[in-house]
Amino acid sequence: MQTDSINKPFLACLLNIRSLALLVGLATFVIYLPALQNGFVSWDDNFYIYENDHIRHLNGEFLRWAFTGFHAANWHPLTWLSHAVDYAFWGLDPWGHHLSNILLHSVNALLVTLLIYRLLRLMPAFCGHLNKEADLLVVAVMTGLLFGLHPLHVESVAWVSERKDLLCALFYLLSLLFYLRLWRNVSKGIEIPKIYGNPNYLICLVLFMLALMSKPMAISLPWVLLLIDGLYRNDHSVGFYGDNWMAKMPFFLLAFVSAVITIAAQKSGSAISSLEVVPLLDRLLVACYALVAYLQKMIWPVDLLPYYAYPKEVEWNAMPYILAVPLVIAITTASVLSVRWHRGWMLAWGYYLITLLPVLGIVQVGSQAMADRYIYLPSIAPFMVFSIMLVLVLRCVKWQQCNTSLRYVCLLFISTAVLIWLLSSLTHKQIRIWRDGESLWHYVIQYNDQIPLAYRQLGITLYERAQYADAAAMMNKALSLSPLDAELLNNLAICYLELGDLNKAMQTVRRALNIEANNLFALNTLGEIYMTQRDYHNANKYFFQVMQLEPDNPLRLFNLAVSFDRLKNSSQACIYWRRYMVLDVTDADDVEIIQHLAKLGCPVD
Image (cartoon, rainbow, N blue to C red; front, top):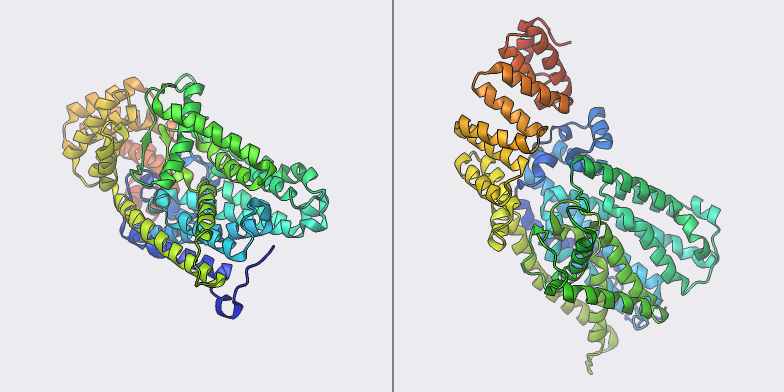
């Protein structure tokens, strides 16, 4: 590749890609420091962290749970491991958990900078106009800064439960970097058996597996590797490309296994919508709209919401779809036609489509149409394209009294300063939205007051603060928008129970069970209502039913043991107390429970 005539003694340190990548990571870390003041939010953070007893002990039982269970309708054992490590260091102090997220995001911004530089340097056919070293440095730094500082990524960083995004991206980016290292010697010719034994290939494969174990969205990686192969073939006509499908088979096998596990996990939580609920044509229209909407939010990042509700009705002749569908078709067509001149543009659009495909809603999971967190990895390609366009524009500026080297240093400095200034203010504003559950859901309601999830989660936040009357009011507002939600009815019943209104609590939980007869949360609430009424026989009946549905949950065993205690059934109480203490290691040494068991005649071993 042709290089610019840079004054090396003066610029050798400054224009070093490793140094620049480190500065990008440092800038990202500094800009996100306000997130350390945030707390947890009442949206998954309870299931993942502050109500999750499993992460409180790094032992064999935890590893079995993390690698074999589908907690929160997901399978991502490395994510659980990271939360357990955080708990070991910080307990339930949100500061430490946010620090881990910020560090991971900063490292990812550093890796993006390195990845873009090495990708363009290895593959100069990406854009024939980028033929100077300084051009590549500017594009890499700009892309890294956009990735690190863009407010669209605040959700993945400031929301502790989205640790899975950050971990997945870390291993995904590292896997791509090692794959590019594999290509360094490709012009010498590599036979398939040697590829399987190449250290860079093996490390790439292991990192891909770790990415899948952090978040299944990484299943796109094998296709991205094939895109890179197609681009590189334009410059090195070697036999490797003809056999690259064989080289990718282990990757596709891991992706297939991950997809099967993910579908099973999502089905266990009833998170996947059927085609009867959301027709395929509706899904395709919403997917096209999301592809364009994400690009629009990258260019103009305003009104970023934590929750974008899926439209109740999708009309093909509505303006958003009339504009989105032709635009997606046009960009795709232009990218395909550009292959004859610059394969890289196809790589950029192909990467964007492939990495977004798992979350575009073709297989509809949840009730959201799109989410800022989904664009975390896919955004790299649009940011890179924007950076290339910026460099091409800046190169047209004629500074008559400046030599080439000084001009590029000025461009890099000015562009960096402008990007940091523009993006940091928007990012700080977005970080404040995630300060706590109340600020988060008030913000959502401000933009759309017809989302039942927002009222329900705000109600949960108020309940956790013992503001039971206000929580009940929010639950009732949510119920007016979604009257057949069994989980919502159960939450409202719990609020009434805390307020001492047992009649309303009983009526509400019965409504929940009429909708979903085996809703274990509603059954448990019904048992607690009977316990409050001192009807221990009925309480025991429902606690036993809940325990059968969830036999390894310590809370279910605790309630059942207490109900047998109240019924003076010492032998059964002893059985369930002992099972409870085996599963809930936090109370394994509880003196009061041990003394109580001794009185029952069943001392702990």
